[in-house]
Image (cartoon, rainbow over all chains, first blue to last red; front, top):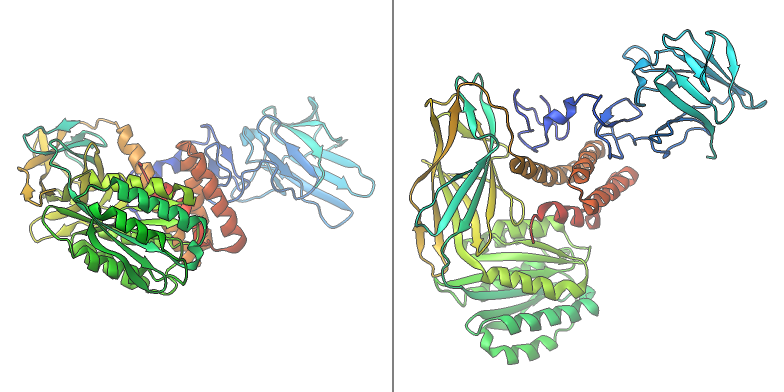
Length: 178
Length: 418
């Protein structure tokens, strides 16, 4: 196995990199164990500030792409919604897979396994300020403040609303200052 | 832990990552062995031939020089009368301030120290060369020659390669060199290599006021040397080999990679000096295939060769290092060995990260630095975590890492015990 740290090509069966002594088994730790995901979906032990694989900052309100964010209130993890240059932005929210990457990827959050690949659609109108969310027929449903949304129907979203992507992942929709 | 108690003055004990090995191993197994060596009987204190090689370049003006003078005065005070001292000053050139003389002349030496005037550039090799010349003036089997080299700058007017050649020459002549970098503008790689090649230690002193303490501590540890030029002669069994890339590391007091030397029949592992009341730790990385015996498997045999402070060369009896053979695999991993591996990995990673940065590969360096943060968090080493995070910021912003950033990180990862 190639050492993810120093690149040394190790013989199979070694527990530690022969050259740099990095423990090779930490990279096969099950994601269910205590830890955080980086924005690119790599699992990391808790306490790190940057992803050990790709170097992306572990999200703790560090980089905001736009004022519109979904926040996990317990962990502080957040994802921001990229704004298009047009008046109206429409993004697909879901869970990243090998074949598909949604505009807003929820896989870095804990309990994201029950989120569908194409879970919901969010539309932001910069001029009127109207924000609308629509469930895309997800397996486990979308909820606003506990109310299940009817699929394929737009619902108004307000700052402070709790949006649940399945019954496991609850995120607060916020508008923050950049 | 296996322990061999003999009447010998040096004792070796060892800890395996796992004290057992399985019969019918399907493949070569990676194994780690932590070796602890400590003195049992203590010979008389050595006579020290101390050579101070001191930077007096213009940048030393003021606080640094005043504190350095204080440090030298204190050293003069604590030297025994039959110890010797020489003082070399260097800027872009070097001169002898105090030629090799017994410490009993301390009064006269002290007046000379008052006259040091800071001027000029930095040529470390000029200072080292004169230092070695002075050291040679007091040679006897029971004399321990040790140079302390202090600089606050890079070797701008000198030649780094020559420094390393001189460090090797010093080692051959039995002179150890400890290096002290003052402030944050010196070259950590150079001072580390000089120390490692000559069998000395490398120190970082940020604040000039701490110079005195560092000099005193270093002198005490020199005076505490019980056995010199200690080496292990190791003969591995047929089913055992050492790693090609990272075979042996010295763990305490400072981490240093050791390249075992093959003398045609056995491996020679040079581990330097052993101090009184201090344990020396070494980590071996071995690859072991199927054991021949079915109960206890011998892995290697060894003798310890050493010199007493009186200069006599001696060798211990031959001893064995063994593993217990079991029918089926017993899963366990010794915590002390694991912790040692983590310490070593921090040190190796720090070196690799610097290498990648120098090769213009900042992304590879960042991956390594991020792993170091993780390990530092695990060790609850806040200082190191902050340092490495500063390094990450710098590399991200500029793609490079100036020496002032490297000094602290290197020191924090290399230094295991005071």
